[in-house]
Length: 187
Image 1 (cartoon, rainbow, N blue to C red):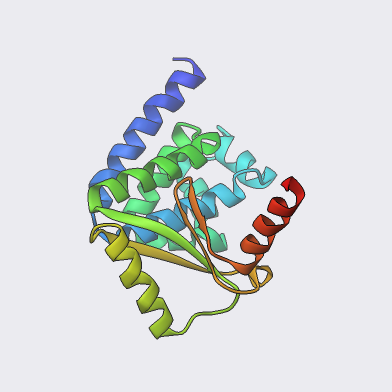
Image 2 (cartoon, rainbow, N blue to C red):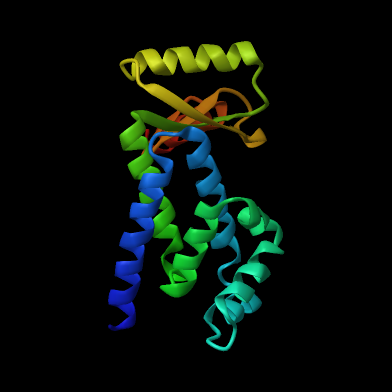
């Protein structure tokens, strides 16, 4: 089997395993998401790739190597994470990790009925402000569950920027000033 077909088959197996392990459990989703993101962050590291791809290193030693890394230390306590890593190693899915993570996120949000929204503000919002933002978003989205990702971007000056998938709502002072500048240039 050629490398591309092997990776495609491995991706299907891994995605099926993730689907069955996560279901709609938000804690499990976060655990697998963080783990795969950590692997994606180190996937270009020469030592990681060498250990992973070396046929002379037994799988048990490869797993022991990964369990000593800060990003993957949770391997020792979770069979599901260990199984995911085994599939990544056996099928050489390192290059596919970004697509796998994206697919896992999309499937999870579709199954759970949640909508992930990145909410950027110039400074940290109080609990009351966060609650107000979430209540308004939930109302605007027809009662869907909103999973917020709170970000602080000081260059916004004031206001909020909301990102949901490819949609962006810019209510920041920085955005308003940029629109005014564009209007003045086009006038």
